Length: 258
Image (cartoon, rainbow, N blue to C red; front, side, top):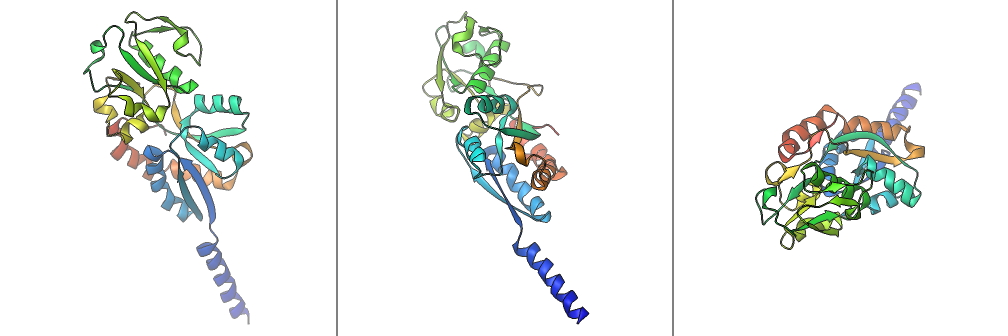
């Protein structure tokens, strides 16, 4: 009888392991976040979690879906963007790990270097507050404009524009498609790569590795100390993920930060 009970207990535990894995739904933008999560998925399976990867192609819905509870976590943004979204939308989201950095770059199909920017050239920049400020600071670093002090600067905060550059503010995901229409555009690395641009080779100028805009895993505040959150962080910051980033993404300008 005892032997039978032992066998039944073993079968019950096995069944729970096989069929009762806790699901973690994470929202990502396709590249590189979605690709990185494909490496994470089998690592989490070893810890008893089923990872479902849900892709988004914008920078607003992943946070709203997380706040509303249809996601457990998301992975697509940096800290300044999260802070701004929390303020604007009155969300209670927190970051739990920094994973990689995607240096923002200036791209063009019309000029080969920034000296090719002529008086009155049209430059595309993201229209969301944090990425627009980041793009403009990149241009300021390279002497194209000067800006007022502050975090969320926009084109209206330009104090000096010696080349009389004109600016077109657009959704970040649309910027690669505007390269035929503008002289140059400042584009996030994930959207540049999706458009077939290689940040390491194609960017006229690019942020260096000291940029503060590391991409993060985000959860609701109430979940930050959960076992699932800890397992997700451990798997994403694993040697396997670091090796994937170093072998596949560093040549494209994307750097690990762990």
